[in-house]
Length: 56
Image (cartoon, rainbow, N blue to C red; front, side):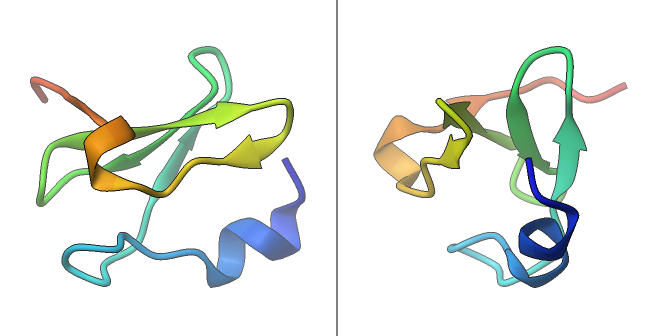
């Protein structure tokens, strides 16, 4: 995933920052507890495609 792209992407719900989980190929929004998938290097930023995550 391009670092420049990560710098400008935000959560579509809260407009907050996203964390890149390289292993899971997801972008994580901690406040909304959502993980947006990255498929073939393209982040899928639709909330209906995101999965709920439990943060520790």
